[in-house]
Length: 132
Image 1 (cartoon, helix red, strand yellow):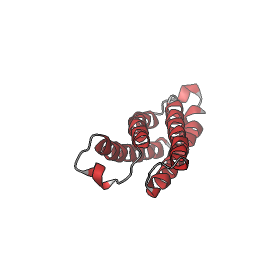
Image 2 (spheres, one colour):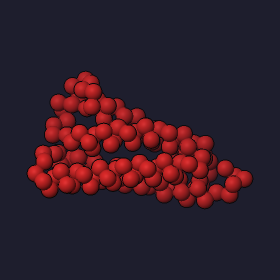
Image 3 (cartoon, helix red, strand yellow):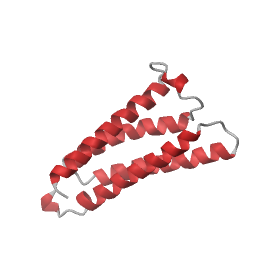
Image 4 (spheres, rainbow, N blue to C red):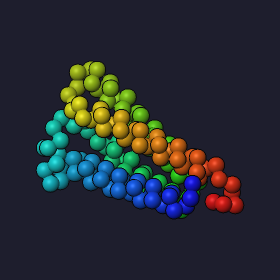
């Protein structure tokens, strides 16, 4: 993949990260009345997304500058999201309240993070040392 394309993909990740940071931070810290608008949110899912937003920002830097550690960071984000999703499913199965959109959003976020992890692995981690 051409470095220019990686820079564009990294920029898209920055936008995704900033939206995630704003939305999850707004729920956690009750900014702009967003917490109320979110309905029956599951706090540990929101916190997981908040943490991943910071990891996405750092990962975007790694993608932009083709750093080999980017794959590990994105894999960590993916692990956090998968654990959070497992917790969400447990929460749902034990009768916890939630919004159906939370499940869809988690599946979407896991898919995006998985795609970015594969992209980083394929186009950065597998690069010869002298190119990185």
